[in-house]
Length: 167
Image (cartoon, rainbow, N blue to C red):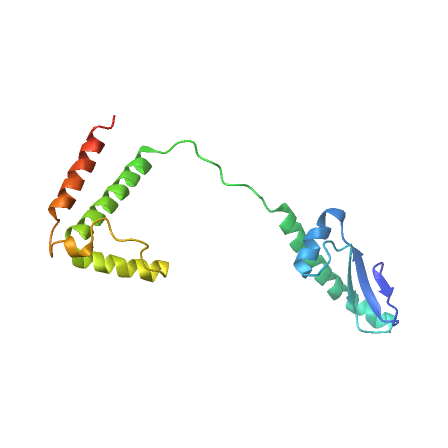
């Protein structure tokens, strides 16, 4: 057997040189502290040469398995996701529908009065872990039980007029 060697305790081992390009991958597979692994060595657990010769093929198969795993790691394609420069019409329509649905949901949520603002504040505390730093745009006490206050309606009209003036 060409790979048989004796260690310092006179126990037979099999040892194979790891190809240069696989050394880092083998070290990663074995989980060692070294960045590269130049040799793979496996003890055969015997001092008898005849028994070592009998056990060597199984130990070499384990070493070959490790080398194949390293080969697979090295040859894996490391392609990056291609960046896209454009969107299809379907994707644009889906995005527009999503934005519109979110706007409708927000409008629906805030339209039902001041109790909803209390629930939104509780959600904010639950998600952020802290209360709001300042009051809502309109103080809670000034809001009607249902619907929008005249000040809110005026603010909505002003925002809609500003949006309508956009090109």
